Image 1 (cartoon, rainbow, N blue to C red):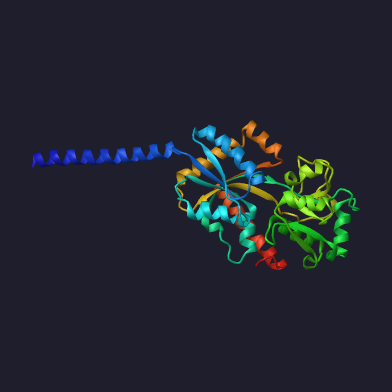
Image 2: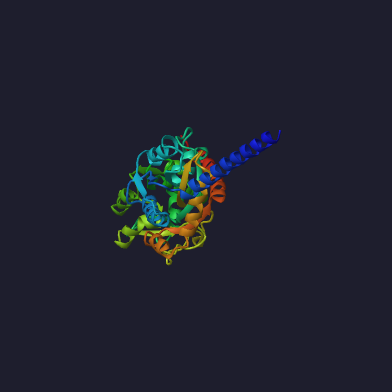
Amino acid sequence: MKGYKQWAAVMMSLLLGVAVSACGNQGTAESAYPSKQVEYIVPYSAGGGVDLVARAAADYLSKEWGQPIVVVNKAGGGGAVGAEYALKQAKNDGYTALAVNVSNTTMLAAGMKTPPITNEDQVYTARIGKGTLAFAVKADAPWKDFAEFSAWVRANPEQLTWTSVGPAGFSAFGVAEWLDVIGADFAKTRMIVTKGASDSVPKVAGGHAVLAVHTVGEIMPMLQAGKVKILAVSGDTRSPFLPDVPTAEEQGIQGLSVFWWTGVSFAKGTPESVIRKWEEAIAKMEKDPAFLQKLSEIQVEPAYAASEAFTKETQTETTYYLELATKKGIRK
């Protein structure tokens, strides 16, 4: 009996040792992430707002973690192609991140009855930045301010032409909300399909469309060149990049809430430790002066939101955009 007890004690000690070792190895594996290159998928072409923010973040995180965070552009389908790759085709092991943004998430879900990507396909990890919506017309357009322009559109909706990448694009939701607020007939206006801001703003500057609705950063080059003028920005405060341009609210047009944002998400099933590590690193990044300077240079405002808050906000936003899309006939 004594021999059996000694044998049992030895076996128990060995089993506990294995268990402790396993836990230790697991902790080491988690703390070692990332142990190799991470692909940061940008579902749009290089040079746009989402791409520039992602590159600034990748540069910071590469230095922070000592591993390359490589931006890979996979454009197409209004952001859906790259999103599908990151969320449905790549492994959910934390080595494929998605540069997620409003157009290929909440607006996509609201604008399409069967969207290729939904909120349920991803873990919203952290929001990084936001962009204020700006309403731009040709530099020599006759309207002196946004209130006068809105009154003209309300009286002549059939004369309003506006640019967008498609009926469920960012600009479409911005225009639809504004027309709803001022009581203009959305159905009588005409959308001109473009490839994005780099295509649509020149169309307005050249007189081929009346209005372009994009972020301040996207319109800034043509504004600085004197080709267009911005009549208003949305939100309840002026843009820090255009302090002399009044908000729509200041001009008596209240309730414009559409705004641009971008952040990071991962496929469902990605290890919780990976989500937490990105979340914490981005929170730290948003306090880094060099990173904040990079955001300022591309006219993007820091807008950090941790995973839980980010997820709740996207759910609320999706509900709102779904109602707007249904009401205005955008949903297809």
